[in-house]
Amino acid sequence: MADWGPVVIAVVLFVLLSPGLLFQLPGRMRVVEFADMQTSALSILVHAIIFFGLITIFLVAIGVHIYTG
Image (cartoon, rainbow, N blue to C red):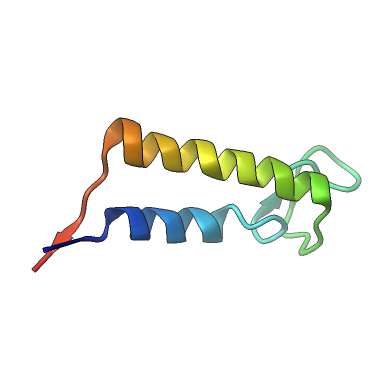
């Protein structure tokens, strides 16, 4: 049996937290910009920290598991 929970959570968070795709924190002109498709080094760092925090909460603290087979 394969545990697909970490894979699914990581892919979903990666897509949702890609800087500039849905939102960018911090933005170039405002604090939050939506669907800008432009990014900066600070924005990448902020989104990486948010990604790490959320994936840690989902996988370690909550323990999401999706078993197949």
